[in-house]
Image (cartoon, rainbow, N blue to C red; front, top):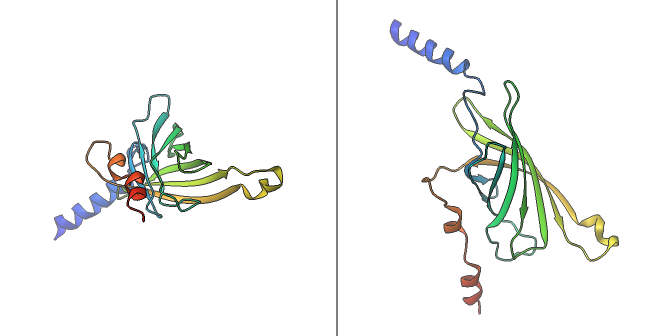
Length: 168
């Protein structure tokens, strides 16, 4: 019993000593938010720039969403911090809106990676008088979705053509 208690105390001490630098948060990969939207980020370049795809489950007009391109940049963290990032999504072929996200990546002591974001969504309006209703603000939290090492998002994207052809 003495050696198992010592091992437990030692393990807890080691976990407590792990710093953010030792638990790196990698943006690349597949992420899912609380609304079941999916985001796949390619490898982050040395200069922090990244690209990817975003498949929303929420649309303004209730139409079939398509995987849309995203482009962003990651700021390297300071001493003991976690990286911040920002990206834009140009909704592809189904919306007249653009979204900008800004957030930060965290890893908890159990290794769970989380992205917390705030976003602005700008929808096109027909006149300056309608400008007041054109921008929405929100928050999303993404968690990493473990997948095989390949691009997965295109295979999860619904076929809008199939949905349109099956409609009465």
